[in-house]
Image (tube, rainbow, N blue to C red; front, side, top):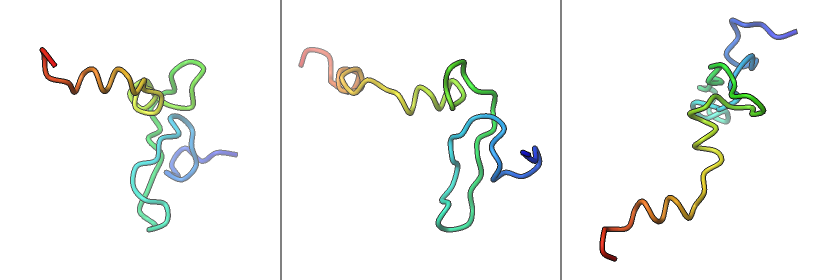
Length: 62
């Protein structure tokens, strides 16, 4: 059973803040986006289209 007060037991967003191997980490825990393990913000970060990132980083006129 999940303990809602334990930051190492996910009850919401599964995005990890921190570094599990170093002992200082927790799950985001914000409400999950529908059909995703992540909240809307972390879903966008996890499932981005690299072509859009390249287009956004180019200067106008290139």
